Length: 119
Image 1 (tube, one colour):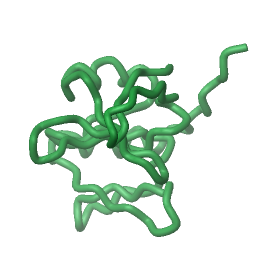
Image 2 (tube, helix red, strand yellow):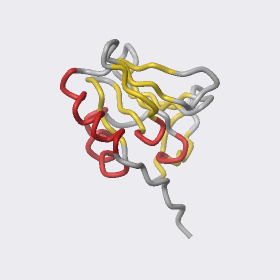
Image 3 (cartoon, helix red, strand yellow):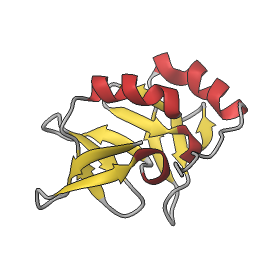
Image 4 (cartoon, helix red, strand yellow):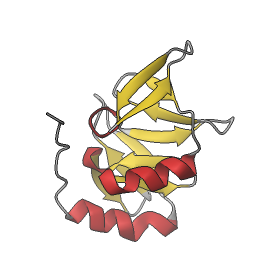
């Protein structure tokens, strides 16, 4: 799935969500930001809309302002209540709400199919 997003200069790009996005998180202003391995893009829609839309393609809302690509998730640490994402040189740890824990544990047990590129 490709979506329109804005870069830091305001230019519009088409972003391949399943392949490129590691996680999405709101900033202090409430805008949803798409984090790839090395860039950040801003959404033109709300976090609630993206959580509903992307759930069917392997993304999960792990707290009020964060949506994670489960194919990039590596491990859930129940002691720290964080999800480890392996998409950068260094591991990234994102906090998880109590409400999301069971769904994350279940998702990490199931193999995640890689996205199929359209022909």
